Image (cartoon, rainbow over all chains, first blue to last red):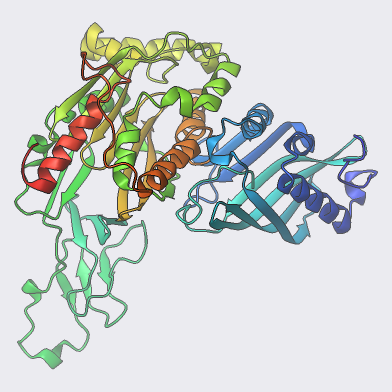
Amino acid sequence: MTALEPAPAVTGVHGVTRADVEDFLYAEAELLDAWELDTWIALFTADCRYVVPCNDTPEGDPTRDLVLIDDNALRLRSRVERLNSRKAHREYPHSTTSHQVSNVRLRPVEGEELPVVAEFTVWRFRGERSTTYVGRYAYRLRVVDGHLRIAAKRATLAMGSLRQVADVAIIL
Amino acid sequence: MRRPVGNRAVFMVRNKAGEVKVFHNSCSHRGAVVCRKDSGNAKVFQCFYHAWSFDTDGKLVGVPDREAYGDGLDFGALGLRPVARVESYRGFVFLSYDPDIMGLVDYLAGAAEYLDLVVDATGDAEIIRGTNEYAIDANWKLLAENSIDGYHAVPTHDTYFKYLVSLGTDLSGGVAGTAKSLGNGHAVLEYAAPWGRPVAKWEPLFGEDSREEIGRLRADLVDKYGEARARRMADTNRNMLIYPNLVINDIMAITVRTFMPTSADRMEVTAWELAPRDELPQLRQRRLDSFLTFLGPGGFATPDDIEALESCQQGFHSGGLEWNDLSRGMARDPLANDEEQMRAFWRQWNSQVTGGAR
């Protein structure tokens, strides 16, 4: 990747520091807030998964339980294509968002994957309305060609329901 | 299980005999809520305020320092208040706060037959874990319309149909079918399914390995219900509104959706997914995928419905329009993308609100 490469080069998953991960997650947040979704999706591996469970089933397993979002790479690409189009009526024009990532914690490496947990707050401003998504990210990161990549991203909402935010039309 | 129904706190419990009971969630002593979890198991509901307790029949069974009352406390009269009317049909529990309302089967009128169709085709059914609980800043009647509106699908849900086509679904067959009133404000669209159905219409998206299973499901339906009814169960979609606020969409997945007004311009929506309990994992996966991508608030379609309804609310609020136009299809036998089904809803609503038809 070019100047947009949003993370420092790393040599292997074992040498990754919290600062590396923080830089990477902050860069991801910046891409989402800039609606640079074509660049953002390049952060994911070819076998990635992006999951948002239902509010009342935070441990929900997408193979068995209903979830809010369960994207593999193909569906994530479709989601990005949708959000890039003028026909995603809920997000056209786009909301202004602010993805805030904190409490970043690295878990012990498992195989070639680094599990990472972080808290998030995502503000969404559209028209006169402001809504806030709060929850916890669980990432599984890999090193591909010397750069961190997302093999899995799970955003578990802390809110008891979606009543205050209406929907999950944006990417968390 | 507890939830607000019509903005009132109620809870439902099975008593020892297995009967469904629904109570106003309020202690007969000083009013506090006695069921404080959304779901779970309990033999006794104890109010935390003064520790009065009630059994699953709502009977008062425990009062601390009871001797303070002497013989003056009538345990029989101080049970939890049951909701005025509760009846169930094919596993769906309905309640009414009107003690004089007609019986449920009479109330359901023509909708009962469609519930039968959905439930019979599903067999041993369950509500899948995971609830969609969202809200729309619009009048609730706009969602009653939207849920049975075939006309909006193409312009509103362009990105969803593009997604389906990208997966290889052939939508060229369209949605040929009819719309009809089922009596008492209930209405349904029924049309040839433009996509596969886990029960029991195969399409390439389901994968070659599930072709046989879907064929078997279909053969079972033919055995049980005959060719004509089985074909209807397998090959047609149904979007049904049970007046005033229950929607059963039997499409590529089955949604059970209720919506409650919390004010004139806001509603709360709750939706569940109904499915056969012992479904093959790849069919269950496809059903889950279909539900969350089309019907869920994180999918490729429902957010655009929310936008549409909020947009209508803002538009109507501007004050330029006095009436919604629902005349589509009045000049012909109503098709699935006409508006007879919405007129059925509004006729009933109007009759109830004004006390007579107009």
